[in-house]
Image (cartoon, rainbow, N blue to C red; front, side):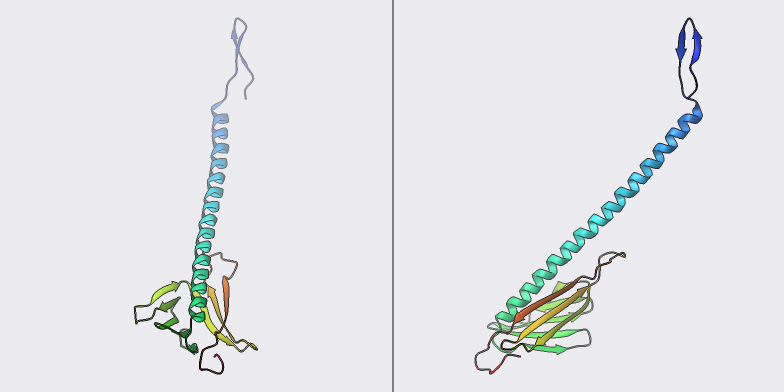
Length: 174
């Protein structure tokens, strides 16, 4: 800032030079650019968290639906390996429910031959494992999802365990 200027009769005026105004505007612009960059970074992270929360909710709902289907089984559950992953056939009172992995999705076909519905997306790996636990055998469904965004540091892994119900007329479950 320049020293004050004597305007005569005891009046003095202070002012800014054009160079000082340009410097102040430049500093203000740098602060605004840094603030906007921080805002957009935070917004992107918030969207990734919302997407991950949505994926987690979808996987948990699919896992609980699978557990409910296994608990309603009327005959031994059959698990087969396929080139894409697995095929799990669950006999129900009204038909057979099938869970299968194709591509990056897990599909569920309801009884009655209806078209399959996509229950989990962005699947990297998925398998159903028979566990001969004594005295109650169990099935475990393991799922790994592709992380949300390019900078995903955590691998979304899920595991659902369900005891295989005793089926009338069979000596043991699968």
